[in-house]
Image (cartoon, rainbow, N blue to C red; front, side):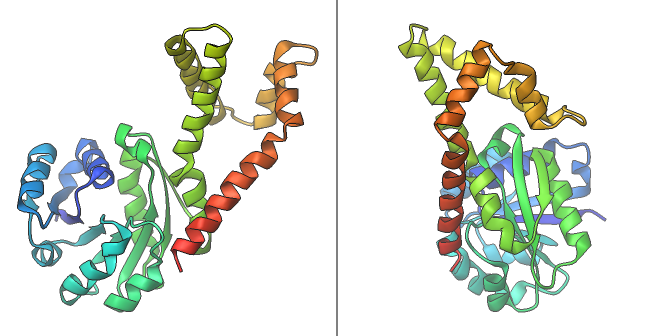
Length: 268
């Protein structure tokens, strides 16, 4: 029997997940619907995604086995209060609302099976990185199911909920940090005399290739890859030594630490 998946909210992240599921080889196993309370937005989402988009959240929950909460965090309580009477023990709740703990959701809807997800925006190009954690009443098979879904838009790992704020800092916020690094390197090339578009292409493709080298490194460590390029006495070694003297490791630790702390504050 097909599993019915409902998305409360059909914004960018929900749309990326929906498109990934529909594009996967196993999409015939799922019946997908969405909901948007605004009629005009619902019509646009239905046309864009090619799925039924309702304007009644309760009706969507009643007709779904898995419900994705894909609304802004400040709307979560309102939505859950609206649909809680339709949530039965057989239904799985999946929240992608940043900073909303599973315990907060369980407090409103009772002993429901809840999975919390931290996706990221590269899901829009099917290169997402998601972290998930189980609520108190969720089962291992629930986590496995959600990870399978999210594998359609990139990669996914499972962590304890106490670690999800670190995931938020690294992969949820991380794209902005990498954009900044790429932009800074590209602008450096421009300042030294290279056309900006060419410098940006060089930087972006190099970042993409370096990431792929890490994925395909086998038994090599990342430091091995660095040493293979930054041979002593060479130009790369000079640049790498500059990064160390400028304490890049400390910089990025502070970036991730401060972002993690902010994510923790949002969850309180």
